[in-house]
Length: 244
Image 1 (cartoon, one colour):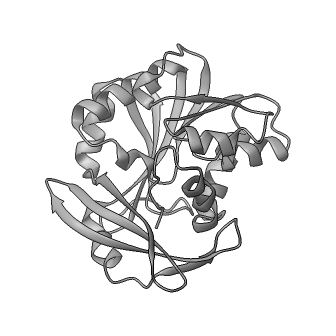
Image 2: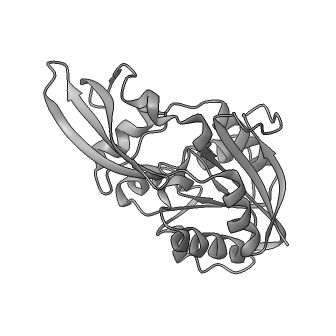
Image 3: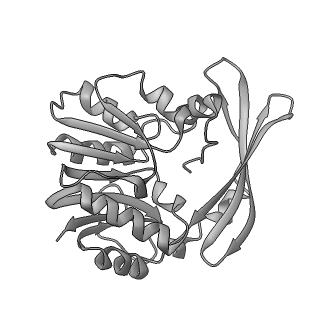
């Protein structure tokens, strides 16, 4: 499960990459990034995908955007890409990118329809005609939150060399929004940090309506990182949306 982030907390930002190492989803996004000339990573976090793209020879424009200054502090350890602080709805670029991505279920941090529509409109505006917005979100039909309360704690060594454990408590599920806490404890069980998050689960049909209302068309939809066609029971909704 992709963990949520405490805005401005540098310790949490550095732990984020430990809890979320490179995986199949990152490889999926990287392939699309490598095929595009100018790329905008919305909710780029620590910049893992763009930094890997540059390291693997991408020569075009790579821009990362994130609202968390701590995440961007980590990202800016690589000056081969350009990093900006801000939310998706803040985007002011106009027709400058071939591809925009939003990975790691970051789309679920957009809670209201108004926030989603403002963000989608700004992302579409940033794209060249025919440009692609690629993103993923969890399928509400799979009810992933049922596992979060009972899954064992994730035990890792943080960047400072300290053993920590991370687990989750689901507090509420209402109107498609799951409220939970991410709890980070040290080796003796003492809670070091308890972070609250809200995640919106959008039905695929409603997602289609939101996308088309701002000028996107659905070019492809997958249910897994191997590009299998989406089935209603799949845990992921991976969407390739093209600007009309």
